[in-house]
Length: 295
Image (cartoon, rainbow, N blue to C red; front, side, top):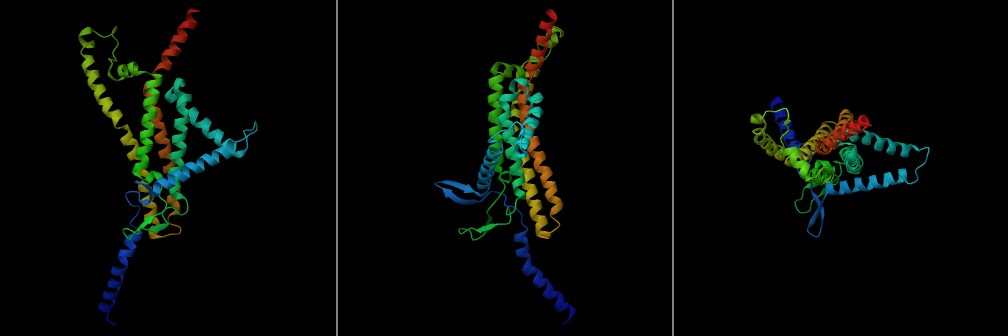
């Protein structure tokens, strides 16, 4: 057989195998896929993963702390260290007045997002497929909840509603309006010719701040989705090239990214709460200092 014929046969074989290879390494679908319907509500693969993770967290924590001991067990010590560590982190950020009320929301966000981020590394995720009888194609049975934009938007909406509750409950509408639109200059130290025109400038800055606040859920949801969805595609690509050995370093990378994204999400929500609710602590401390000095 001539060299030309051999090259032609090899090219034909490669062209025949290329579509199959492309299908395997195409990565994660851009949207979650419905596994079944409950009435008109489609239940997607990412929703099922989220439910399983939530149920597993509830059972694991209940088993770990069902009988707290003075000398904690290993499981109890892990839970207590997580709780105390997150409380110590958020307390100076959100302020002592809001730290305890906001703590359940923040620790729930951190723990749930962290396990959801790491769920993409569990065995079976992204490797078990079901045939879609309507389209004839294949779809993932298990998809990480945070690799679905619907999941991250829901988390951002919960965080935003929590923020709204805490700032209204512990700061109040009047303080919020003053903090956003109020004149920040000191009237005693600023000449009137400068002080009063500053109202217009700070009002304009307040409008920009309102736009920034409105976009917070967008930035929270897109940042989390982009990192987790990108990581899932990276793992698919590496597994498509070589199933053994090559993906291992990227597992450690995804562990780090999953932790960082959960930490950043929780930290940002804490900062958003503290920007408004943490103003009173300095004033209270100064007021207490003046009272002690007077006595």
